[in-house]
Amino acid sequence: MPGVSTSAFVLRAVDLRESDRLLTLLTEKLGKVSAVARGARTSRKRFGGALEPFALIEVLLERGRGRESLFAMTEASLKDAHEGLSRDLERLGAAAFIVELAREVTPEHEPDAALFRTVATSLSILSTAKTCATRPFAVAVGLGILTSAGFAVSADRCNACGKPVPENRKACFDPRRGGVVCTACGGGPLLLSAEAAASLAALGHVPLVEASRAEISGGAILEIETALSAFLEQHLPHLLRSAHFRRQVGPTGM
Image (cartoon, rainbow, N blue to C red; front, side, top):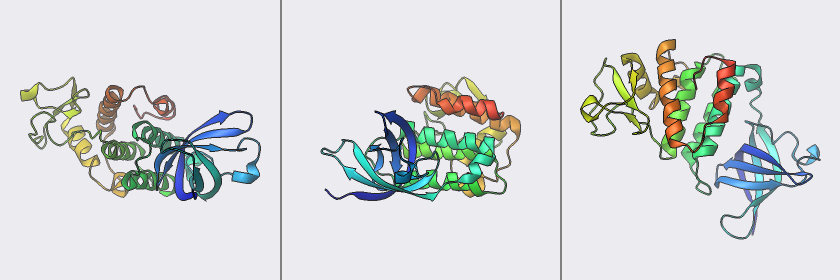
């Protein structure tokens, strides 16, 4: 069977045997797949720096027998290293959150052009933007990834009855029920200020470039991050490792 050439991101790399690496890839054409990179640990000549975290790469994958079998990565070349991420710990933390979330919520072998585009665009903006509202931006990207994966957070209307959230009003957020829930439907354990409720709803719809320039108060973004963290705890099998890193590098709350 001929190989498949596709753009990809490395979502995870695990050492395998003495010289190989087992990779989890988010690819443009194949979705999330697992692939073995033979000799990746002992020979940098074969893959160079193409297997670094957050890099956009072009790979050639050879499919094994069976739809869900491992691929073999026979070639990999670097398209964009996103070097700007290494100069800013807060942006690096946001990138780690984006990549880990994409890995955790994306089903295998299901191509999703919108999801791949979201990850690619977000890492490019984080790497190159002269200024970036990193915290609102990470929330916006996270909401987009969750929506693509079928875990949409309801923010602009009650997740139980569908009633729109009134403007300039506080809102109750129930992580277990998937978002905002009006008081008539029982409300939720988290109370969002009017600014936080409106901003959460807006971040779920604005283009990523606009999200990178979002002006949200520190208190409101902390409320939003707390709500999203609680949502992820309810709907993911385990906590994201990037959450701990982000707490160490800045007051991200997530």
